[in-house]
Image 1 (tube, rainbow, N blue to C red):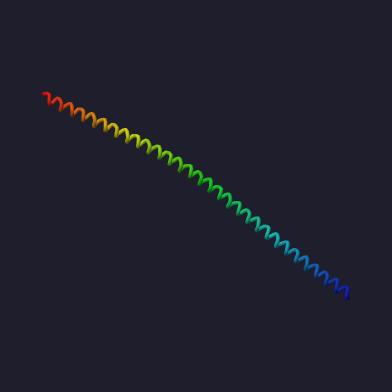
Image 2 (tube, one colour):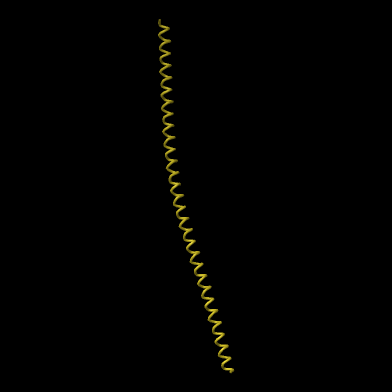
Length: 109
């Protein structure tokens, strides 16, 4: 009877140990699955960050092009203004010469 009780106690202990090992295995599996999910989420976030960075670089390039175009337009406007100033100065000089010539003619008449 003692052997049978010992055997039953050993069998019960072995069953508890098996269940405990099974629970630990299940916990380890759940932790592994959580880690995989975390890695997948982190990878998606990384990919999103890479896409956002690429978009930001594209916008920066577009801004640089716009600034270059605006600079070229400004330079052209400044050149046009300088041409207009030169034309105005030349016209004033011609008008001054014409006035001087008219005054000279008026004195000689």
